[in-house]
Amino acid sequence: MTTAAQRNTASVLRRTALLGAISLALLAGNAQAQHAGDSTMVKLIRSLVGSGALTAEAGDLLIEEARREAQPPATAASTQAQPGDVRVPYIPQTVRDEIREEVKAEVMAQARDERWAAPDAVPEWTQRIRLEGDVRVRNESRLYSDSNSNIQVNWAAINAGNGYDVNRNTHLPYPPLLNTRQDRNNSWRIRARLGLTADLGEHVQGGVRLATGNDDGPVSTTQTLGGGLAKKDAWIDQAWIAWTPIDALRVVGGRFENPYWSTEALFSNDLNFDGVSVQYQDRFASDDLTVFATLGLTPLEYSGDSFPSTSTEKMKSRDKWLNGLQVGAEWAFNEDHRLRGALAYYDFRRITGQLSEPCALYAGDTFCSTDWTRPQFMQKGNTLMLLRNIALDPVNPANTPQPQYVGLASEFELVDVNLRYTLPAFNGYGLQLDGNWIRNLAYDPGEMWARANGGIVTNLTLPASGIAGPRDIDSGDTAWQLQATFGTLALKQPGNWNAWLGYRRVEADAVPDGYNDSDFHLGGTNAKGYYLGASWLFDKRAWLTGSWFSAKEVSGPPLAIDVFQLEVNAKF
Image (cartoon, rainbow, N blue to C red):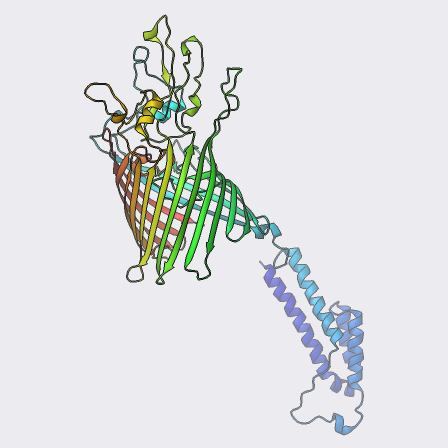
């Protein structure tokens, strides 16, 4: 099949041959004219005009030039050819311009018709859009210790349902329980993300990204395969607009990637943020020091506009927010040595549970006043409290059903410190050392006990007397992590590799358990242990990664969980 490029080449060759024929005709013009007049030359030019290769005007000019060249010389000395001389005829500039424009017009017309190499062959809007994405195929095994406690309540399932009746006189079955002893080997899981970024002007960009996921939870976009070979879901993972009035300042609104520099002890790598962030980053003239700062306003949950649905009196707005501020700097010194540090403050507002006003569910009430304070998403580890102050039926108090929800007992105001030191090692490899320390400034067991009015249901150690108090809350307010990475720190060429080893400890109420890594201890807080892994880039945009997480509880009943992952990643 003849391609557009081949047809274009043929057209150009035809034009070149035409010009060559004209030049040869002019070179031979004198000799032919002397022996046969100008009939041969005239016939050639008129033939070219008749075929459409030349316009009539261009033909007339060429005939006139040929006749002029054929005129007898004024003097023999001025026209007598010498051995080795080459006669180069003159082609008028107007003729050359006309031929060039005619060739150009024909080529461009053909390009437009066949949509190759024309300026408008690709629509302008496509040049402002960039597509990117990645695919991950993972084999995962979850390994549980046989000595784990087999009573680990699935509080998230309780909050997502109609509550759990804590009155043993009216409800005997166990609440929903988590698996803690039966291994889950060789689960195949995938992650796929496809994003679009568009330049909307000189200073504005917009983006949308879709991602897989088992559910609408915020911390993972991994999808477990199986399920009867059913089709898999895709979710809106990002949707944002960014304004960059100057190079150093960027304002983003919508749903976007984590704007803070943090570790997975606090925020999962898959976690995206809603709301608005203002990001500043500037480099000093020496280029050795870079400073950065981020301010974020993130709505976590909105109270229902019509809550309670069965009451004429509606609740005031009690929205939950995360307000964050981070400042930091990176200093490059001694060529390949870099030191980076950041200090952040995160204020989680109104995410703490509250004990309700007395609610007479036995009399037909369908809600209690603080049902809205239960977390919309949670993993495990935080200290929890009962939310409902359920009034007892005076006729039969012992048999009054008491369906309960739970909420977070502690408030959360976090200080987060991150440090990174990057330096060369040997054989061209690099070494990166990371440290992270987090403290919950709002952690106070006394306030937690008073807030719950004694209704603490997790992280509580009952004394021998059977009467518990604030001192019996078995929790903590600190998290920290250390990690070393060795090898080619940024995988760019096939054959590059790196490996890492780290240790993490997250006490029960150091951070909210709903937003951090879902792999280490299978998510949440009250976990400590080590993790290690390695990656190998085996093709330009594809790499193999193996990871091992070994974690157990910091306090409370035993819960040891190991996770092994082997995965192939591809990016486009």
